[in-house]
Length: 71
Image (cartoon, rainbow, N blue to C red; front, side, top):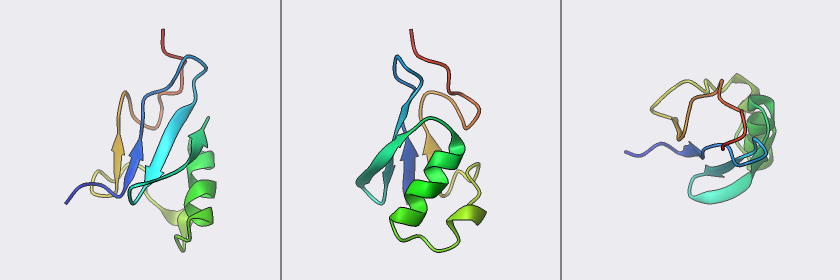
């Protein structure tokens, strides 16, 4: 089963597009933004989500530590 959360590679400004359950939910500049978006999308306990769990999140273009602008 594919991951429910997909975080795309950083753009030229270091922002990463975020999709949850197939829907665009925001553009993040840090992992905390993703938690806010998940809460807004109705995910209970968004603060406790393990953003390193590959069964839940697919990080494209670098993991949760990668926020540098793309060249």
